[in-house]
Image (cartoon, rainbow, N blue to C red; front, top):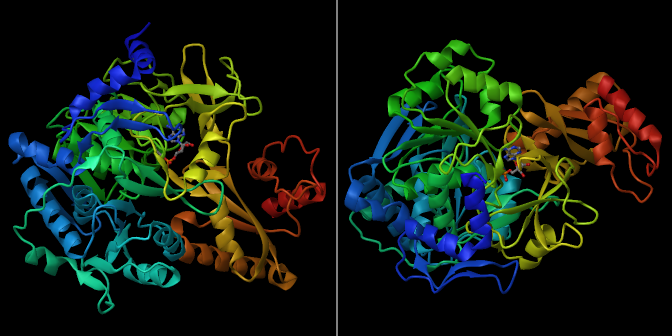
Length: 630
Ligand code: PRX
């Protein structure tokens, strides 16, 4: 048995012993009385009775040993700015933000919605919420008003923290009008909106509701805000993600389990040491940003580099220039970013001094072999694929190099991480599949610390969605297909549900369909994810127009396609905009009226549509084919 198998086996055979040891990585104000309580499965509780605080562990705890060490580097190639905050400075900023939130009447358990570009104040706001026991809900800045409104309505925040604008590839993206529109659409009204003015865009204020961050920050200078100690299972945050229905799910995370899980992963998976610098090129709006821009590196006493910008501006060497400049030791990105770089001059990979860099982690979507080889050979550094989800909060599959550098297998993110009792199961019977047979990637409970504790405000949905998806077996479904080989390496083969993955961004096809349907020109629509060489997948829409005249000529179709794309862009954001909208007279359905999405996806990818015995009207698929060709 290899070392990582031994650690994995022990974590499952003796979860209480294993996780009790890991729990020593963080400070507890009150020690826990019980490591694991699974008596109300699947509502697992870790470190029962223990009281701790994420902000204390990420910031205050390090003041004794590393007050003057950098904690947060921020670089924006959008605004040509850079700032570094030591742990002492980070503590001061977070304390001020916490004082401001308290001044705006935020109490323990209240939600604070953070709709922010990649600026330090976003991290301050997250940590400040953790400090005072408020529950943050960060909404990706690339989402627009309808997406944002759905999240405001569900999270019911007391305060929203936002900014005048973000910037993407040199183009200013005003946030405030989108936020105002979202609040207008929402039945829930936040009491206050705290605004960071970057002076990038005009920012009309709503009297009595909108507050200025800079003015408040001056006012609260020097105010000490103690950490509010939370029972381990009390929520730290809610992060919305897409699923099968149009309504996003609020993934709720606990406090103590998350802190322990991240601290453990920083060593066992990411090989991080206190004083290291980690550069996670993601966004705080996604789980990778929560875990490995903000909380993970800080819990481990590292410096984190937060980057506002793209991988190719001002040039294709920017990421590596940052590695050299900030002596980055660990880097984390997504395969799409590497595929983007692959189109640039390969000389960028060798132009800078990358001697500080030890490992490059990639996650969020399948890592194809050519991309893995290209970056690994180009950098001469190990590339570590890792597979996980918003729901898990930290890697489920990885080569756990902090335990042992098992040989990687291209195309596989590796073996199950300690704590995960991962099974490949038959979708119809729930029985475990033998090696080599494709099935659903599932996890037998209890889930390890750090994983979602429930769906925010909807325990039933948590059980129904995740724990009753596989028949005859109470297990957590990842909604991914997978296969295990004889050595225990798992290969991920795509989603079992209607979630698509565009450039590492997780999107629900139902949300896009609902948005398209809101346009009066649309009678019926289906959206599927279609393979794309650069983005992994793109959304493609097949649409039946209400008025045939609007699709009668090529010009008319082009105009309507543009209009529909705009609808999605305005409602959900540019990330969700379909790559193409095709017009048809019928959609392929079963005789009971269910859309044949998999057949549509196959046809759109030029593959065989497979079993069509249940199809109502075979002509509909032919039409689809014709539309794609035209
Ligand atoms: O389908 C899997 C894919 O991304 C989904 C989770 O996306 P999200 O909730 O945004 O969390 C991303 C955290 C890294 C998964 O269900 N996925 C993620 N990582 C990989 C992957 N597919 C293949 N290989 C991966 N390494």
